[in-house]
Image (cartoon, rainbow, N blue to C red; front, side, top):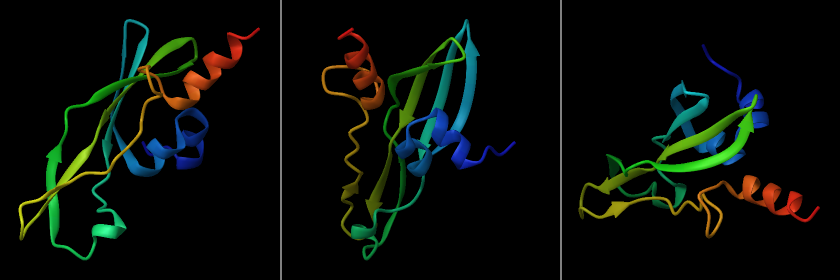
Length: 117
């Protein structure tokens, strides 16, 4: 079943919907685990070089806003590419989590705001 990106962007961080594919969703003991894999799209600034996909880094786990009363954990796997001529590894520099936390920036900002009241 394909869920339109417009709907996903209402529930999940925009950058994840734009740059990552959902590979799996599990509800384990009331915790929603959503697995993301970075799309195999080489960054434009490196498109002039002969790169090929070279697997993924280990997933990081980030807490996001609860959905329907369930805790949400995002399992995010970043892709890496290898330059076929030099062997150089390329990866995007994603800032997925708020500094000093294991939460998305939006969720951390939300918690910061509600803690002031």
